[in-house]
Amino acid sequence: MTTEPGPDDGLGPTEWITGVPGPHTVGLGPWAQEHPGEPAPTGARYDPELLAEGDRRNVVDPYRYWTREAIVADLDARRHPFHVAIENLGHDANIGTVVRTANAFGAQAVHIVGRKRWNRRGAMVTDRYQHLHHHPDTDALAAWCAERDLPIVAVDNLPGSVPLERAALPRRCLLLFGQEGPGVSGDARHVAGSTVSIAQFGSTRSINVGVAAGIAMHAWVREHADLDTAW
Image (cartoon, rainbow, N blue to C red; front, side, top):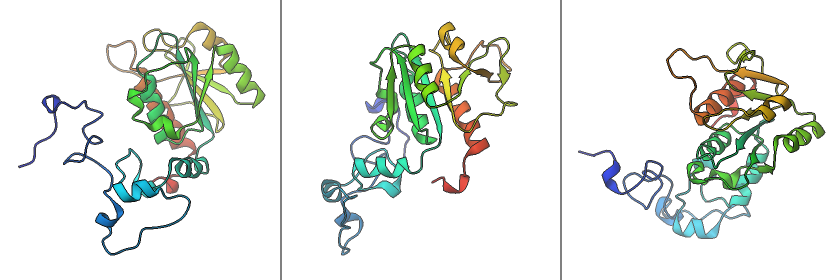
């Protein structure tokens, strides 16, 4: 009988399937082991070291054995025209989750507003394949968006906000999220062209910002993405 990993395994929940080779890992072993008798593929996109030693990275199977540069180049041809920004006023640990989710939904880029350093653990190394930008404050972010005619849509449960479930998100836009706890700052509200809220029905005043970001990005995907191109 197999047992599920747990706290006593000495691994954190984000490491149970991506740690050292074992029953809970993902990926592929060396090419010769996975494809006995078949010649290893050649070409600039393939990494000789990964072909020889195996590929246990947190990437979808079509990218196995590819170099990081080749994966980024292919993703660049698949990315969607929405951006994601999150305020980092106090080293918010949720930023890694937002980056990972943005990668999963094919966001064009993620923008960190405020402090430059952030906790990357929750990103599960997806930040290596995601375009990241830093802006010292919301005015700098707004100027960057204005130069590209990119509408800013704040996501927060604020008076006057439009329910996300009834809103029409622009195809080209930047979804702006505040820090866990205080939510979108006053400065961020000032630069946003519109604000959407997520319907809630329980007693809590708000949901985790990483969860909210995932809901908002998926709302964009449902409205604009070509689902036939999903993995």
